[in-house]
Image (tube, rainbow, N blue to C red):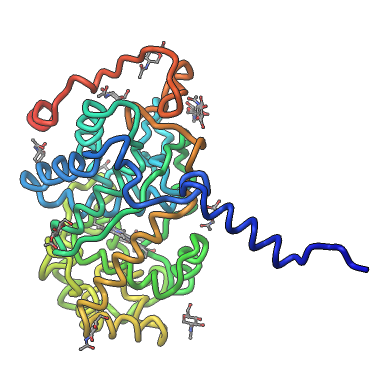
Length: 358
Ligand code: HEM
Ligand SMILES: *[C@@H]1O[C@H](CO)[C@@H](O)[C@H](O)[C@H]1NC(C)=O
Ligand SMILES: *[C@@H]1O[C@H](CO)[C@@H](O)[C@H](O)[C@H]1NC(C)=O
Ligand SMILES: *[C@@H]1O[C@H](CO)[C@@H](O)[C@H](O)[C@H]1NC(C)=O
Ligand SMILES: *[C@@H]1O[C@H](CO)[C@@H](O)[C@H](O)[C@H]1NC(C)=O
Ligand SMILES: *[C@@H]1O[C@H](CO)[C@@H](O)[C@H](O)[C@H]1NC(C)=O
Ligand SMILES: *[C@@H]1O[C@H](CO)[C@@H](O)[C@H](O)[C@H]1NC(C)=O
Ligand SMILES: *[C@@H]1O[C@H](CO)[C@@H](O)[C@H](O)[C@H]1NC(C)=O
Ligand SMILES: *[C@@H]1O[C@H](CO)[C@@H](O)[C@H](O)[C@H]1NC(C)=O
Ligand SMILES: *[C@@H]1O[C@H](CO)[C@@H](O)[C@H](O)[C@H]1NC(C)=O
Ligand SMILES: *[C@@H]1O[C@H](CO)[C@@H](O)[C@H](O)[C@H]1NC(C)=O
Ligand SMILES: *[C@@H]1O[C@H](CO)[C@@H](O)[C@H](O)[C@H]1NC(C)=O
């Protein structure tokens, strides 16, 4: 006689109970996470992003990249925003410093949400919302962002160097870097289309335009474009050289599918961009997105949502940071999870307008 309950039945019961739990306790993000706790959170972030965008449209590209650089390093936990007294945080690492931008927009958004609903909205969610709003402003496309991320409190420069793909990466290295974050080769191609907006400092393409042997001889750079870039960036330029150039020189502020059209013309700015053409599988994806902008935008927003799920902290993990640049004091570590002590957040009395004009 076998009195064991069939495994399938146990699995079914466990699954049924689990599915009835709130998404947050299942460790999942959910659309509208702040609907009850801070119903205007997403609107306030949108306003802060729009204000900054109206002053400098370049912040949109900065905020899209900020979310990517947050998610690839210790997950989407706002670790990229933390500052360090001795300059050893993620934001101090070469891939982020000096190029990463949009920090002050996140700070303005955080000040606004703290004023409206203190200790409720994580910095990591603000970064995800701000990337979405930037895509909306530059790309005429909208999507819903699952939220409920919590903020981490560890930020180490070496983690950024280890986890962020570099512009000298080969196709195989790019695919491996994204696979390590559970993103497919096709999603790597799709997300690379973000290089249709924004700018780059000289150091990210210098070796390619002057020597063209790094890491291998690269026939995918138009000689005329290379000459233009040499005129812009002297061979002794370095990371502190302030010159920048558009990543997509034809429509630098519009999130369109132009990136994929530039690649076959040998007009991809980075060695890594051109690598998407060196592999038949990746190249077929490039061609399909060059041919159909609607298709790319649908895939792009879906891939952004998937990227926004990388190694997130949820439920009682992490904390709701009060100032996005610093972890909470231990005495205020209960932020967002039942608070015993009064806590005076200096940002709570600062309006967006005050921050924006200071
Ligand atoms: C596939 C691997 C990738 C590599 C190797 C790479 C590399 C780079 C580099 C070197 C820059 C210029 C930095 C500088 O100013 O020197 C840049 C800019 C940028 N990247 Fe990527 N990137 C990759 C993927 C992505 C992804 C997945 C996104 C977002 C979904 C993204 C969004 C951007 C944006 C928007 C800019 C312009 C930033 C600005 O204007 O401030 N990149 N990228
Ligand atoms: C920098 O500070 C962090 C913590 O504040 C510490 O763990 C690290 O060892 C310091 N690094 C250097 C190089 O001093
Ligand atoms: C931006 O997002 C808003 C809100 O979802 C939407 O109504 C609007 O159509 C979007 N803008 C564009 C140009 O798609
Ligand atoms: C792969 O991801 C893990 C977990 O995020 C990280 O610790 C590791 O450094 C990553 N390795 C590479 C090569 O990106
Ligand atoms: C070009 O290569 C030479 C020899 O390897 C090197 O010394 C020089 O720094 C390189 N220049 C650039 C701009 O990469
Ligand atoms: C970068 O180049 C400038 C001008 O050539 C030079 O003054 C500066 O010392 C260099 N900085 C670094 C970090 O190499
Ligand atoms: C091209 O990339 C795909 C996806 O990573 C990989 O499976 C395939 O082996 C690559 N092909 C070549 C010829 O390198
Ligand atoms: C482009 O992609 C969209 C979305 O997937 C699809 O509905 C449409 O049929 C495609 N257009 C062409 C011309 O293939
Ligand atoms: C780090 O975050 C945890 C919550 O995950 C919190 O309990 C702890 O106090 C934080 N550490 C510091 C130094 O703030
Ligand atoms: C955390 O505590 C230190 C020392 O008590 C204090 O100087 C600092 O202002 C506090 N930080 C915040 C954000 O309140
Ligand atoms: C947040 O912390 C940073 C670093 O300590 C500080 O410079 C900034 O003024 C703080 N912001 C607010 C709004 O308190
Ligand atoms: C407007 O943008 C410029 C950079 O283009 C920046 O220096 C300035 O701080 C911004 N002003 C406001 C009020 O955000």
